[in-house]
Length: 426
Ligand SMILES: Nc1ncnc2c1ncn2[C@@H]1O[C@H](COP(=O)(O)OP(=O)(O)OP(=O)(O)O)[C@@H](O)[C@H]1O
Ligand SMILES: [Mg+2]
Image 1 (spheres, rainbow, N blue to C red):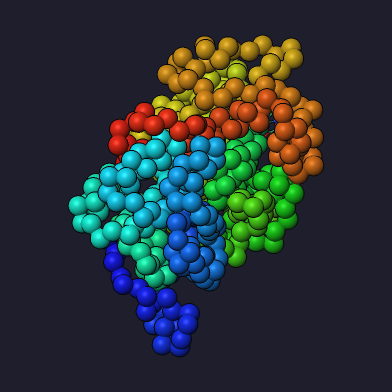
Image 2 (cartoon, helix red, strand yellow):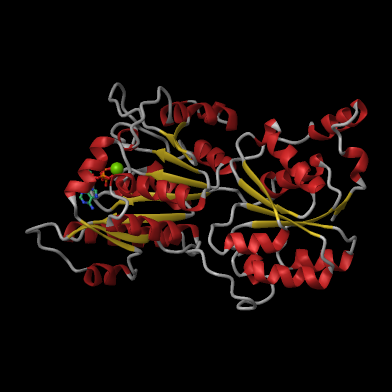
């Protein structure tokens, strides 16, 4: 619990206050690409959060400040995704606050962290909130450096879980559409959840993310792997190109002026750095099997194996899934996506027959549609930008929901889950 009688730290009225703020801010490192939304009840608290949002250390974060407190938050999140961090101000006493938080728990994604700014210095309430998954309880009036310090601790301290989930996409065979799915799902996650996504194209000689997003950056993944010893968040930022509001790309050079033989750990530094700065890191892994692809796949938080419904795909998918299950005995098995279904005249193994030996249920089945997929690829657009009502767009959304563990926004159902159950970290 942070209780600073912070009137003197308001900080922007006189030089002494400014110096004090500057000194307190010196220790704060730049905040990663997280989304933060605040629902305040009082102007001074809203102002401190807005000031924090304008600070240079928050340049990568997306900060929105609303009024209306917890009730407004519940209303808002009944129809909208929750950000990485929700800050809620409440003047309520313990009992009322707990009641309000219960209704929030029903609409708040479990992956979102929640910080409460209260008006009561109540240690029992503080302990109760922390035990139930609230990340921090600050007491108003708050000082901007304290708030920044809390955000930095939640998302950047060495013992905090790495911010970014890594999602690796690989094909059971060449040309099955794994990259297309990786790019469209990365795009969907960034649009659906307004959450920042970094897409890394690990297919250095032949990668297509640059074509699919109509980008031609001078630098990208090649500089990241060949200068891995220099890798840090500042260097990584310089290599990214922006594809959409919340989507940045680490593009492949897609040229053959050299060969690309990597050691097992070649991509470790760039992936770990990306994870520290961005909530979702999607990895477009080429269909090859060598030390580095095995390492990348083994270490990913989630894996999507894309296959088309023929025997070679089934054999390869089975080998991949079995091998990755063995390498990751304590993780969820890879997810299966069946793609290019219903290609005219091609004999097909049914989805059920394909999935059965893998002991998996496909998380999506996508039909073969060369017209729409071809047009999107040739125009450097996502499928949703080419034909928003296309059935595959719904499939990309489904994959996005499955991989992020988020569910579609629901109306609040009071008391449907236990007290704050949804805030509890998994
Ligand atoms: N459902 C689909 N219907 C029609 N065409 C598709 C579909 N999915 C992907 N494609 C097309 O298939 C081709 C190969 O796709 P993509 O490059 O994504 O596959 P990949 O598995 O990543 O291949 P690679 O082995 O080269 O990495 C592309 O031209 C893409 O537009
Ligand atoms: Mg590919």
